[in-house]
Length: 401
Length: 132
Ligand SMILES: [Zn+2]
Image 1 (cartoon, chains in turn red, brown):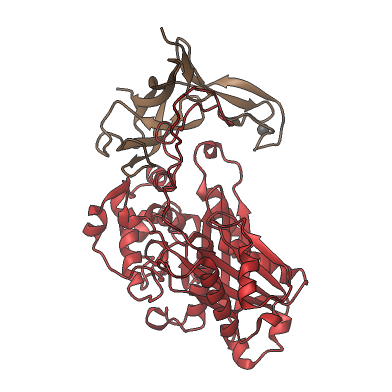
Image 2 (spheres, protein in one colour):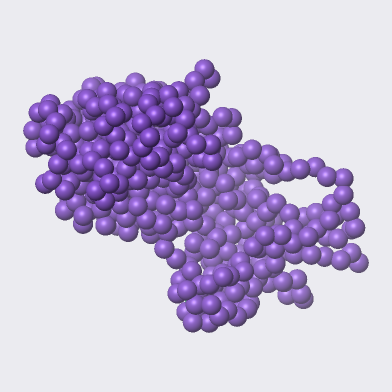
């Protein structure tokens, strides 16, 4: 259909730590790689969506164009928590959908520095201390660690334990099996930050960060970039047979925010918005979860991946523990999940993640994923969550060939 | 006796310390922060409502690696209060282990001094302890 929008080119840098390259280097590398992969030139591009979180007020998109071609096109610098990359992708998608242009570029890039997911210390030492209520809760001191935790490892641990409370057969071991799987998958992905397999005992015996998540069940601190070139169906028809054969159809592009739920006053509810976004995406694409050949979902922590099996309807409702026990999400299982190694081993450069998972699924749908190729993959789904919250889901399908 | 100040304004320090919420008059949705409007129905009229002092552990995590300056390990939990509303705070007065802290465990509100300022004013926080 000519009103479909397609991924024409995509690229990602190897994820890891880059001391000698800044985020402009990484972003430009990904952008030029995606343009080359799509067989097009920056002059062809009519819009640029640039996703970055840590320098989101610093004109990252314009600085990337200053490296790869200042063609004067509109740049949208996007920040949307861990859904930043996917939101940048969708910005380009929307511009094409609106008819403003027929080709767009999306880049997600992040240099994480040393902060990791716990954040930096920001407690100032003062000689004089006077308690005064501050902010929307009238807090008189830092409440982190006093009134529970609001940091990522704890929030996602609590989200997993809430699922364990509501459903049978879910505990420390089931969460650990998620990390065991993703580390095993990463061995086949040369672009992953870490490519090392661990036994279940090693995962469970690693340093405890925030029970039930051990160190190996938390994503590492990683730099990297990913990019995609999107094209309208009409423009795609004018391109070569090879470009048309390798193009991947975007069957659904969904972004939402968290609807009000009673418990979300004290802990972000990452379930309701994911379930709603997934249901909408399946409906738009006319695809059921059973049709999926692979899924790249937001495993920032092992506990998060397990609950999303249920939220994305990959398993029976309430059955995520049983599903990992019977190896449903392994690469040779019912629906392979995170065959890239996921955020847990591939890494999670915040702004890049949402496009890197589109790169991964696109590469499988083209049959170009090498050793980690899922045989005859036709349909795939990508999912990211930005806490606070945003959920982005894309369903991708290979072209008819 | 030193004067005291609650760690957050939704903690009321009286003979029976308890939490309060801003409840939407139209739909009953409850909020700990001050409101511009209701997140559930967009209503703009609110009333103060006291919350129950006992409840059950809906979820928890045992934090071993924390933000700088926070003593570890400690237990952060989501507690479903009797009479409604979920609140987050620490589980105190028990060992921070998965053997002692269990999902569904009955707990009750307790308060304690966490710090004092240069004037000697004490900051009082709340947590939850096992109910039996
Ligand atoms: Zn209301």
